[in-house]
Picture 1 (cartoon, chains in turn purple, green):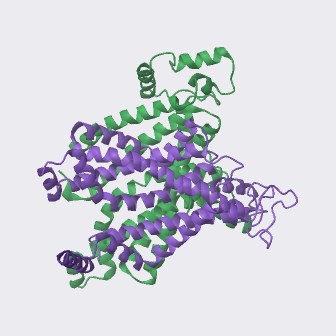
Picture 2 (picture 1 turned 90 degrees about the horizontal axis):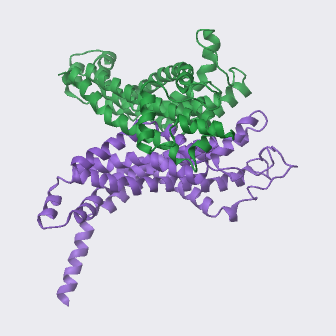
Picture 3 (picture 1 turned 90 degrees about the vertical axis):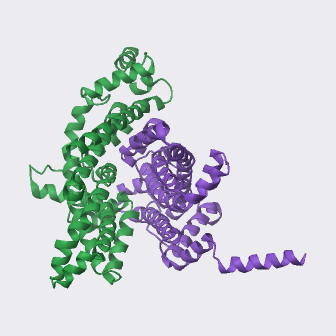
Length: 296
Length: 313
């Protein structure tokens, strides 16, 4: 009994003196004020999206013909649009489309890209060559043009836009995972895991995957930023969220026609996209610096 | 160099094969009978039958693919359903507009991006460095369609200095042409300038720490000559390759920019085609952009070898 307690104390002392990589990364991340602020902005947008029905001042689809294109006022903080809908309400509800599109399309890319990259990098040989050429082919098509093509053929809707963006983002994750796996699989600890007779799947999932997670996390954060812009772009072109459901991209599309009389219609949704994307980029940059073992 | 180009060209063959399979399979994502969907408003059974014949939709998939690739290789990318014109000639008509726009955008991006990159590296941790980094962050985070709309609001609606949209060919009236092109080109170049700035900054910081720069300074050379003649030359090498990856951003960006400023280029062609369900045009544009993108990257790799004597075989 006493012996066990002694071991536990020794363990605790050791844990206190040797910082775990996660604790170190968190400590480093906390030092970056820009990234922390960005995290707060993301939290605000996420809460706004989640609590939209509770905090929105109006129904985002409610058309008020007596209040068409009204400038920002105490009644309508962000003004109203061309059919008298409250712009603030639409920006709040639009956060749902943008954030969902950002997260879901990157989730699709991760779910497809990571296993493919893991197999490709781990096995090598013919399978690797095949997957690599397919990845090259996907990367050879400019991101947005390919997303537009997919969205066009799948049909315009928010779900299809997410699939289109997800497919176009996938090759980045295949390539990243593959490269990381190839670097990690020659390490001694992987060799040791193989020597004690672990099966391949166990080596790949238990010994390699956790070591490439930091790189994936950074890329995923930056990809969410790119995916939010891509969703806004597709919605702007009419290929994403369909009207009257609000999305920042389609709001900008409508705003374009009323720049002379109602510039606020363009300012707020654009600012919302900018702030969200900027925040994800800042957090991504912050994570990269915090997780890089070479930097101090 | 020749063996390098040969090897790279050989590598392109499987990539091009998969690109063609990808683009070919797009039409099979269409819900229902592709012939019926591709016919659009057209309900005439004869016309639908003609589409089925033309695309060999009644044959097995691999056969359809072979027909499609054969056509594409001989320059037949199909015909626009809406404009009743071969896709290739449509693309050939629109391409010069986009190339002009993209060229001005590249000049803007290089000037701002490399300039800001040098300044921020040389004056590291100064106010200039912060300003340049904020500019880069702003550049990659601003959706270019929003930037475009805001520029139109400022320079066309409020100040009335520049036309909000339209296009005048360079050969017709270069002043009017530049007036219509400057805003879209800036919008297009802005995001790339940001990326180039980051690459230039990190490459310059790396080079400025090397021994030969210390030697050059120790010899008493002017700082200007150290930076431009000694450091920049070497720093620009990685910037070329990394910058070449931005061709894709340029082509993607052109779609939105042309849409906002009503520039009748390549990007507007694909958007119009999407809305008119002109699927052959969509496929043609993707195929041509992918091929162009690969060719540009190959050229960038060759340029990289040319400026870096150590890589010459």
